[in-house]
Length: 114
Length: 114
Image 1: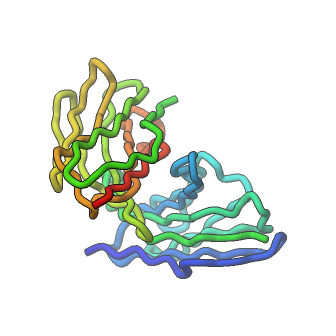
Image 2: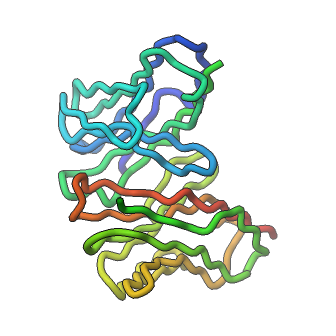
């Protein structure tokens, strides 16, 4: 089975801190995604990547950046965390281009920014 | 732009009751339609899909039929179990769009009582 692992289940940070959320997948998938999930808003795409060192903005990229130095790892970076970035963050991956239908999700990281 | 609208929850049912979760979509072209499920404490996973009009997706007793005339993809199950308690997300992918990424609805929380 595909495994998508997010480094932390719960994270508490302070306003202004730099925050790194790590995601690793073990199925050699080309595509990786970062979503945030908020009650009443569903899932919103932050950034995605179709290849190593490649990144594209999703629907809500402001305040975030990403890094994909290796195929299996996709990091989400909050340069200066703010309280409105308190959310559940979900990482996902999928196979080659054109196969984004079946996303495999990690269990999520619940980030609280105080 | 493309969008998905699903009924607001939460939905609370007794075990063995009939389930319907409504989902309608707005999209140009011919999107593929999906239902994803998120069990407590887990990431999302694909439940079923349909890729063209009149297709029926089914899995684990759940069904949904792609209705182009009503732009709908309602999820149904004849007899729910406590283990079906989860959040259900309707989603679409429009290959005619610019990104070919999934667009999710806001999710519907289902609670099944014994």
